[in-house]
Each structure stands twice: as C-alpha cells, then as structure tokens.
Length: 66
Image 1 (spheres, rainbow, N blue to C red):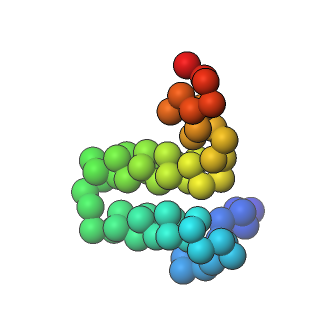
Image 2: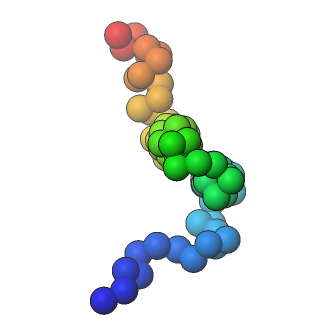
C-alpha cells in the first residue's frame, strides 16, 4: 500500500510562509546525509514558530513567562 499523506515535490501548502520554510528541504539533495539532521531541526523549529506563534512567545519568556 502506498503512503498518500505526503505532498508531491514542488507542491504548495497554500501558506506562503510555511512554503518558504519547507523550501529549505530542497537543499537536502546537495548535502551529505550527515548534514540532514541540522536541516530537519531548523525546518522543525521554523515551522513551529510559524504554526504556533504563542509557543514561541512562551519559549522566549514573553508575557511574564519564565
């Protein structure tokens, strides 16, 4: 059975900021496998910031949070 949850390469999410973050994955083909984790972690952090801005504020201590 084929996994159909992944969007085809070059497809758009409909959100320009999310698409900009995901475009960083395009550089994976030019990197050795040992460099992939750094890219994935960067994309994950940036997506979290785009999709959960309140969480970003909490992590940085905004609004009186530690």
